[in-house]
Amino acid sequence: MDPAALAGRLEAQGERVAGSDAERRAAALCAQELRSGGRRPRTVTVWARLHRAPARALYAAIGIAGSLVAVHHAAVGLGLAAGALLAVILEAAGVPVASILQVRRATQNVVAPPPAERGGRALLVLTAAVDAPRNALLRRLARSRAGRRLPGAPGLLALALAGVAACAGARLGGAGGTAIGIVQLLPSIALLLLAGGFVEEALSDFEPIADGPAVALALAAALDAQPPRAMAVEVLIAGAGEAGAPGMAAYVGARRHDVAPEEVVVVHLGNARGPVRYVLSDGEDIPFRLHPRLIELAKALPNAEPLRGRGRSAARVARGARWPAIALEGDARPLAAAALRLISAIDRELLQARGS
Image (tube, rainbow, N blue to C red):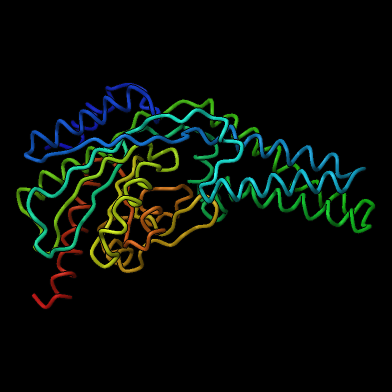
């Protein structure tokens, strides 16, 4: 199976916005490919609030208002900034605040269990998402050389709100003058830029990329033809992977009591063009390091480059459940070759650990 050709077929489904008809068509195409390869995929509906940028823009606007009000009414300004900061923290923890006003939309997971019984083998979960990433300025900045040294946009939002709250608290304690005004100006400018960035993100176009799911399907076919000795392969085409990965979160929530961390390995295949890259850490607010040993194995991949992610990928969600996880991305054909090489290395390590 040629992953580049399959990626073209998925991209032809249209703008695959999370929760859209195009995403459902692409997921159905993945299920059809898995079924034609001899697997028995099932489709699971996941309901989630998929549009996060508008709520973040609102929190930034509340922070700006708090900064302006704090000049003459420090207590009110502190309340606005601290309230927005608390809401951002709650949203990051999965508790909807402003986003509760959004309508929940349906996305779907396509789950294809191993074609044969596990028989005591570890479970390798190949995961990818068919929804397309947004070509937003904040995303491009996060992936730039300078952006990789900073927290993601939600993390910067939290820091800027904390800065405004701290300045308002200082004013409430009696601080004043030019110095506090200059200090307060810095997070206020950051909030203004972030508010514009979140609005642009909500309105931005989507990149027609589907290399991740295409590679996952191609690898599934290759591994079914020549199965790993230490692992049984499950394929998960997770819903809304570019919108906070609620599909992966639902999958992990349903499986975490059935699969122990030492029995599973997650390999996430991302939608991003260019050379093959392996993700060292991921996370929108605080960078969360992916599995150290899997990173070491990925470093041995020929011509692979390290990347510090600033999103919430399926690998990040899996690590939150203490599952070993790694994420790879790149053009379809080299990505497929690199992922297959990595899976072979993981299989050898598991065999050696079991003394086989």
